[in-house]
Image 1 (cartoon, rainbow, N blue to C red):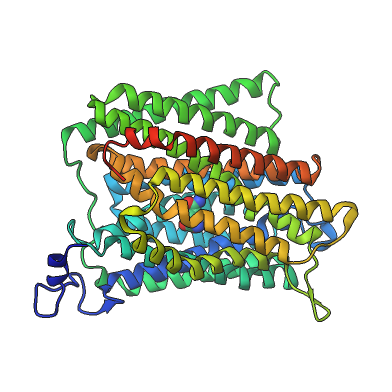
Image 2: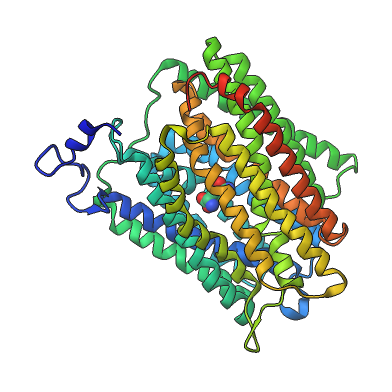
Length: 506
Ligand code: GLN
């Protein structure tokens, strides 16, 4: 960091805090509002997600929906994938029409309504609730991060630290949500757990509304496209989306009419999977064809493709926390302490706690290493290797649990430790690297691409969990470990090449 930059933040110099008189750990006061809003949103999301697959698969006598794991995995995959997928149109709608501030508010209201709907004893209300959460999160999640970015002037060096603080808010929510909702959901009643998620979101909305003044004018207006190219790009983007959506709908309708598609959870989820893969392929093909990219830009786009694939594999393994690993916690882990069995969902707050504890260590490490720190492709590869190592631990744990034995809590704790080490290598650098690599006129679009990688990953993670009963666990976890380790090795070997493609961006 340059010394001159520090100087401007000394008291008496042009004020460091632009949008509010009061500051938040030396950051704009508005960050406190966004931190708390996102904390409560994640409280709801991870609280609800900790219950979801357990509720879907629990026997009717236990108040669950008694689904097979194949069906439950399909519903879970479709839902968690769409939550991230809708970040693409959600960001776009805010950019063009609503502005980020309103998008976050509307999104929050839809999410809260969604959780309350899931608490209503009706199948229609439950699925409508899932739909509302998808739409609401699509509006809220990308846009609240965009507002964080707008709290800082372009040259403000505190921006990265601001995002790290915000990531803490995410994980504080991800820690508290499963703690409260799993206890209520598993020990009292599933619906009380879902309603608690809704109450959390309501608190978030109240904080957000009360804090409007402290946000200044960050995210207030829909930003008009800065350059004519970017507005054509967005128009083409919309047209492409409409055509793809139309083709997909027509295809589904035709398949249905021909009797090829029986609308079950699995077939709908399959259809979505095909759509997702086609969309990714068409999207990148289109991206390379449309822009008049310079050779450097083209190289960087290829680097983004490599990082995208790596991130999709990473999230595919990591996000099984809520699916297969949640099932393993319920079915195969000894959870009794002093005669009391704690809820399976309590394992869901472990990764968040590890993030809170380890993030400062990693921040220190990267600063300490300075220019000697590994490049982004190497960090991505470390992320993949670490998540793979976590699944190797699960192979050993599932071998021990064969024949219905219950294993100690240490196995899942060790697995989550590796997963979080991987997350901290990959996730914080991911978004910033992708935005730095993207040609300026498509930065917003590339943020959406980052969420698209999470959508693909969540889909994979859910579908793998669907095989929980049909494939032996050591094999299933072994395949996940093998795939991610292999991907990590390939990326490590390719990293000098990827670095060259990055054209000077670290
Ligand atoms: N855990 C982070 C969050 O909830 C990142 C999740 C993701 O991108 N898959 O925001």
